[in-house]
Image 1: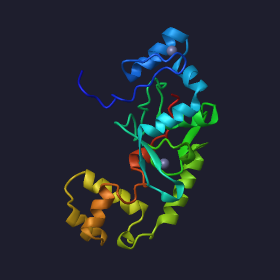
Image 2: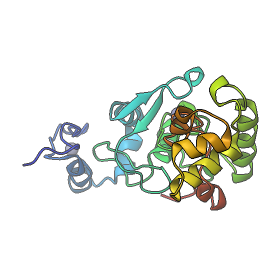
Image 3: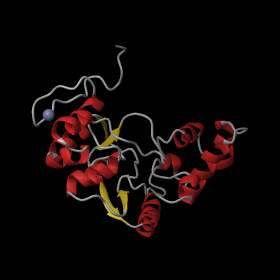
Image 4: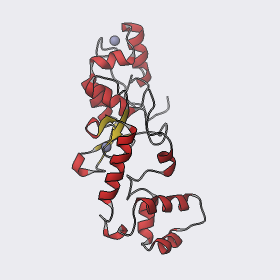
Length: 215
Ligand SMILES: [Zn+2]
Ligand SMILES: [Zn+2]
């Protein structure tokens, strides 16, 4: 069997110790052997679910004052949001599952990221809120962050969006953008590759609905 990123993330059944051959197998097992959905199963062991969510994520210090982000690995399913790599997990977005496991209730509304990192599933960075709140909070954060970094002091959220858009559309090099916006080439590089201003969303994401996916 070829090595896959799923290998080693399998977990024995907590109810009977059955070892599934692969992570998907756990959900099939609990259904067949115990008549439980993945939600029913992990609903009994929410602490274990959260521990496994953390263990299968990359811990990244995006906002040190908040503690590590739990960046879920793998490709985003939509706009940067990801499903989990946890064995037997319900099929849902990782950050929504994190709120479910943490609070015991499925989030009825949007789940907001305090850290602005959509792949993050650290429940300490998440809370349930409305779309309007999400927009308001983001605007406040953007204002608070402006001018924080000397090298990019000339940049703000709107300029950052413009730089990313111009670069993405092609025809602009780092050098031309640097000259146009009055910053260094490395500042452009950081902005384009989201090493700085990672919290500034793309316009496409901003225009559409935020992150509501029922499951
Ligand atoms: Zn079992
Ligand atoms: Zn986070």
